[in-house]
Image (cartoon, rainbow, N blue to C red; front, side, top):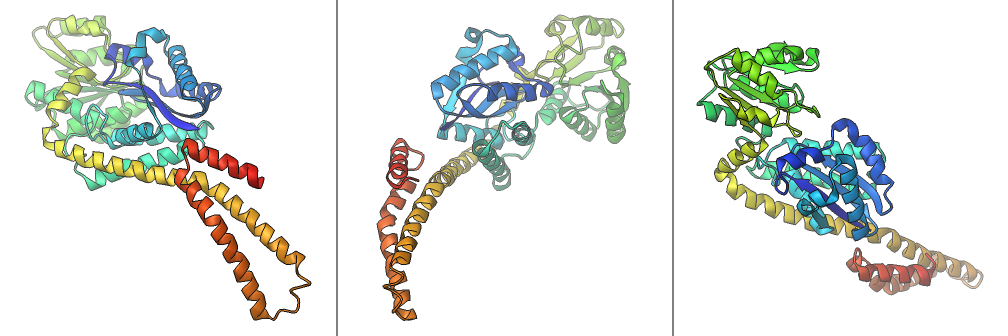
Length: 419
């Protein structure tokens, strides 16, 4: 058995294609059940965020599993395999482990060091476990990945400064407009990302903050907490007409702002420019909005460029985090090796102990005349012989665990000792 990751991310695929490959949260349970039914996938976890769609799996055949994941991605997206296969990446065993650890540490994010991804990795694992898709192998891997992500942020300064997509979106808007003072800002979405944007806008002292969400109660609760005003979702076009900046990130599978909506809003505010920052994947704003006079539309591609430019002060931390990842990959491999060898080693030692005890029982009559001291000497002698005989097979098995040679040695021991 091996662990693989097959995926697509903001680094490998155009945004317009990535958004078609992204799974909505409500679709994940069914998708996990689908993966479990694939012939070569034993366990599976799906990490689907605005920046990536990745399938982590324990597999019995790499190439067979790779083909199954490709067809799974085609099935859930409606995109032909030939249209995205060149954008796929696949990592195997230690490469897959290292990739997950880098993802959890924030090294593979558009905003390097961002904290949201660590919670997303944990949530993906917890959902897969709840659906019965993540078993002992992937649960052990993801538990370790969460620890690595925490260590990276504790032991280095990788998370210092602007280290979330929501913070970066607000910083991008503020930088484009030379600040948010006296500006009217509309935040669309009251989920985790929307909350982060609203909090950051409030911290930056925007002139007026409006919060829109499909759930009026959530919009009202968030607006109340940040000192803003709620907007009913049906009134969003009217709110856009008042805004200087619109920040949007919902989980909607369809556009929440169409070109017609924004064109109508611009007609109601002649001469006033509008900045829209759309960091949703799939996108919340129809791309044709960018063609409307007076509107500047920025998306995840623009945010990624902005985040890259702001990274200079933390580049030294990236090297430190990579060192942590390499160290933790080695530690994880050692733990896996020990787990793989331990049951067979225990079974071998138990079989030998059973033989030792059976022989002592067989010679019980002939040993009856021994005094306690002599009997203890016989016990110690028999235990010592077993320990010496089993020492070399035990060491070899542990050293080779997880390798092809290790599998051959393990199979030989099982056959020879009927384990």
